[in-house]
Image (tube, rainbow, N blue to C red; front, side, top):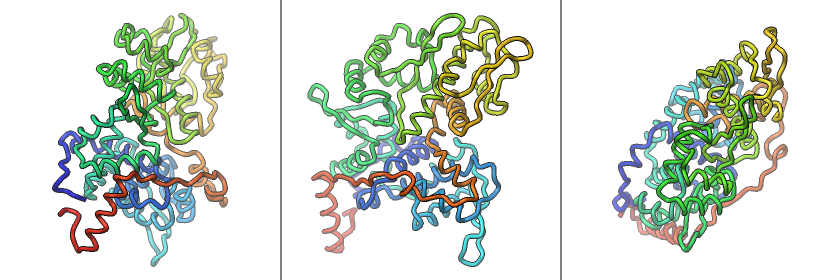
Length: 435
């Protein structure tokens, strides 16, 4: 790429390794069904490889195993969109960050020894590795653009200026991200707005109209919600905020209602969708869990929850609370309605709650914990079918036969096609891209 004409902004270079790793994972999930794309392969190769490494590592982390045989690994990798030709490169990157050791017998893989760290540390390590691979300016801009759009929409002109990319390079980035549903655009009152479909809950036109109505408040509001997922709707931070009120009234924010012992309360979350339908189900359950715990923290009639994080960890480890509580039957009725668990009479005469130990419910609890700890629903990306393949000794069908998807392509704009033609012409003249 034309390194002399693009100047990467310092704020882009300073994005944390954790964010780089997390957004690389998003890139892979968005682009995994995009095939035969010269733009994706040429300009986002490092990001996609690190994204593939991230998704495989995060699935391996929860196995509770010390190693995994080769065939189970290859099956799981295929289900995650990592083809046979890519797996060796992905394993090499995971070895580079010391997440695995590939034990070989000659040229064959005998087993893969696992030591994947916790999710946040894992993303940080992979984000650091991404930088070591010397990503292109377009990759830097893509990571920065996606992270910016999670914080709120923007006019396309404003986003392009903030990235400081040449117009052809911005077009390439936009085309690839649009194909992967990482970025989309709509015209509102004559201005072209860009947003990430991953960062909204409802209809894009309502979200953009809201952002256009409150341009100076949107990012602060979304930041507050991301920092305090499950924020009570009557919290001083948002109670009298006109942008929040408008977002609730128009369906941009969808408060989770908990009807407990001291009355009905609403809890707000930063908008967040997902690439897969399964991810949306997990997010819905996780938000319900956080809301019920927040109710106990702020509105319980007696013995309010002091540490929501400790409570969710208790549910993950013990599948129930340490003892019954007088408010619990009403407070956790929402979770029963979503088949997360059920209330039962405890020995102290009060009600307790027992989690139904299913893959979906345990994943939702993990996501709820992450939302409370960092605001990022990281584990919502994990695929329960892959866990089944990894933990089973039986043969699994490939995702092509079990979960058919329509392969997509990158619709190249005129600017992108012109840029690629120019690059190919330079190769023919023996020139470099940086001339």
